Image (cartoon, rainbow, N blue to C red; front, side):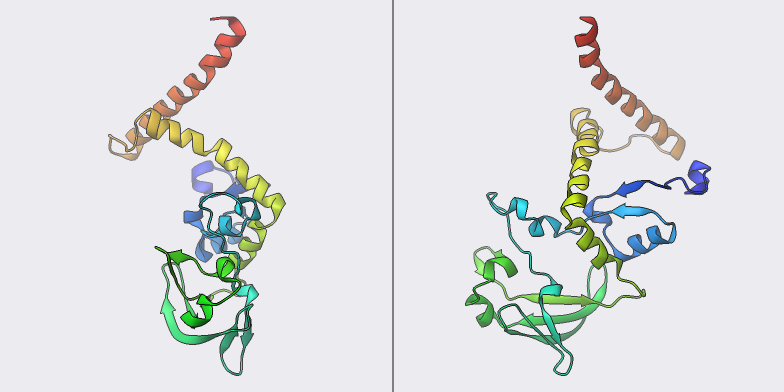
Length: 215
């Protein structure tokens, strides 16, 4: 980062927001090493957001591992409906590895909290599964980030990213049809990107300038 900007602390006092695709323990740990404040939601953060509860097609899935009680002696989890999730072994996940616990399909089908806990697939109800990741670090930053994005104040800040960042990419890739670079080498690609950014900025200026000067 210092090599790119020439500054020792280029992001000091800044808040960096990112897409859910960048949510991982490794990314959060690396940012913490550089003292960079991040706001990157996990892939399920909208399902926990009560704002979307009444929207058509919204899948409510707000129960997390924190809502389940662990019994160390039996190595099981107890769900909010007092049913048991038994240990299924150690599994490798797409972004991590951890311990797998699973409920009985019969218990889930008759559960009063079904809509808050288990998603359906093509009309078929699945049993609840918990993955407890094994952390390589002393502090689990993924859990801290989930709690951070669930805070209404931070969630409101993240919503501004959709207004500021996403329209730029949508305009350049869709409206201006640049879905891939046509040049090679870093220098040429950078020139092509800057040219498209210039065109994007000029287009944004045309309407307000025309309104102001009557063009």
